Length: 288
Image 1 (cartoon, rainbow, N blue to C red):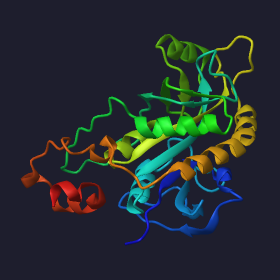
Image 2 (image 1 turned 180 degrees about the vertical axis):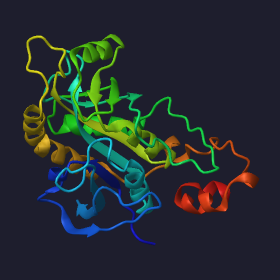
Image 3 (image 1 turned 90 degrees about the vertical axis):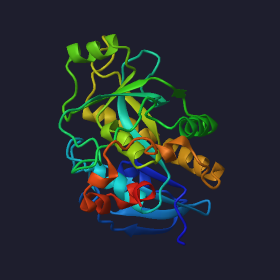
Image 4 (image 1 turned 135 degrees about the horizontal axis):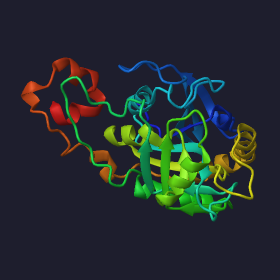
């Protein structure tokens, strides 16, 4: 049996220029949902296999809405991935989550409206539980690794995913703050929910690049601010991943890996055979 990756990282393509990454190769993957955003980069850190996926494609060509989230998660699942770290830029809706800080959120509010949010359709209905949308164990380990490499890191807080690609108006930003939300981004939903449907542990390394547009004494968010902060934090993110991978042993069973166990509601006798085939790597252990 081929060795499984210990970790997958989804983020910007600039993150993957690891000096320590050995035996690199690109893997082209096809899925029933189309091609993922880019070929998947495979390599070894500390002798352990890891894979990387550029969420927005090579050269950042896909808007947050255009990203094929289903193909991305399905492709990683097909490679045997059990754990995913998402790296994303976000705005802060709280004074104490300052630009340059890194947050590992614990909750997610989906405010998108144009995206495919589920693998399940075409005669197969599944209601997966996402009360806690991020893997608690992986999130804790990620936060520990961030702290170990000297990052100013926080754990907890709720992130809202907006449709984008535009940034918020001031009334929108202040409304999200009034709802008790902590972070704002454009890509965590539906990625986190699809990872749960695929029974993959998922955690977010959210890089705070700005105070969105609500802060009266700070510059409003713009692309230049986002890029500068991400470039500054790239090395920190790489160090965190290296530390996290060095601490990883064989993946232990997690509730995330059984998310579909009690989620099927369609009578198996009425499920289309073509749908079962299409979703094989996700549903076979329950329907065969």
